[in-house]
Structure formats: C-alpha cells, structure tokens
Length: 106
Image 1: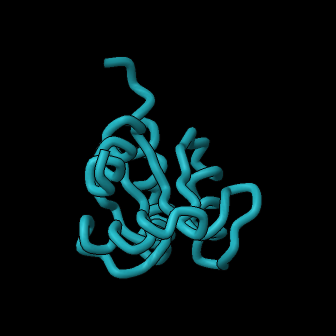
Image 2 (image 1 turned 120 degrees about the vertical axis):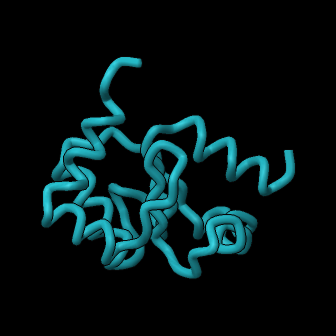
C-alpha cells in the first residue's frame, strides 16, 4: 500500500481521526494537545496518528489534505482543520454535534 492509500485508508476507516504530534496521552506540541482535549471534552472516541513516528505521513498528508500544518482533524472522511478551527467549533457547540453524528447507528 503506498502512502496515499495508507492515508486514505486511515481517514475512511475511522469516523474521527486526528493526525497529531505525539499521542492524546502524550502530546508533543500545544496545538495537538488542545485539539485532543477539545475532542475529549465532547466525548469523542477518536483514532490518532503520531506524525512524529511516521515521517512518510508527516511529509505527505499536507499534500493529500491541502493543509500545511499539524494537527489535522478529519471527521467522516472530511478535513475539518487544525487547532484553531477545532477550538472555534468546540466553543460554538458545533464540534459536539459533529462528534455525536459519528456515533449514530447507520
């Protein structure tokens, strides 16, 4: 599987996935930490990918998503954005609504 297929597979096999520096338990940058915290505060069950441990994803995800920085949050296969956008969505209540949508039975 090439790197683009791996990225696509990860995004489409998890309703919520956060590409971040570090892990939700041990974030390696403040932006990743705040984004993971925002998701946790909404009760989100989410997958995470530590881009520091996977240089191929770190190098290629920005091209795939057309978003230059990390973290990158995807919900239902769609790029939501980075830390600032996630925090704005949390503040407005929209992030919680989006998280709940992923938990509805199909």
